[in-house]
Image (cartoon, rainbow, N blue to C red; front, side, top):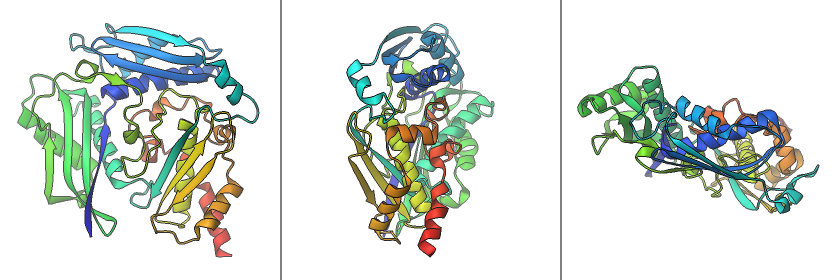
Length: 381
């Protein structure tokens, strides 16, 4: 049986991602001075304006406005008179301390969850990094789009952009890419047909392996034509609106909680990383070809209230045995997760765009598969 599945990615200049990156750069700046910072930072962006708001409790001294301007500059919004640039945009800061009622439940040796909620983790054998192929390729496209802009290969590109990849599966195995959609912001003077040819040759064909592209592959490059006005000048931005882009591209469930601008006592972040770690080790160990993990927590309670595993019928080991190994070898309390993955260190701005799992997070500790060998050896006895 043949099926089609599509995933999307966006560049660092997408208005929602501008907000995510500002929030995570603020989080990193705080953690670099005070690892015990409690942060729930939200950001919105519109034409010529950024609003930073939320709850922060910290001993750190951070110039939030300067962090925002530095982030916007690094993204590439440096040209004046385009509706949004790092020098002239207005930045409003409205931050206050975290509720003491929440702090009662999350501070202490046996740290409780910073909120209730459920998180999902996923892994599969479709790619070397155990990510679904559609989101893996979509991220490769948007990263290549940014590279072509920054290194001057396509000097007429501007920071905003997005990509979409449709993969055809046969009997649950990816066999080809049927459709590629790329929308790239550009300067006024570029010919649209030249742009389309350039993006196919310098972005698509350099990001997607040739084995997946066929004579039947359809390309929609800037399908509406001109895309000059972009970023927050073209559409408002808000933290947390790209959670599917950040995770598995829709191939797995999503708990609905954003990670942007949140410290790891919020299980939206720490729980999501642990769920990925569990799923990836299960697949790496050969216990299943794909695995989805759900964790759920109650505010102020350290142990998860539930653990759910779904192997989609691909498991090679009894689920009850897998669950027993997880509960024996993994401490699922938020403080234990923070310590295991060093989540009280400034690591978040490096993964605030192009995905928090897989290749983009290859150096992050939740991507390690250190349990897989141990579990494999036990099953061999």
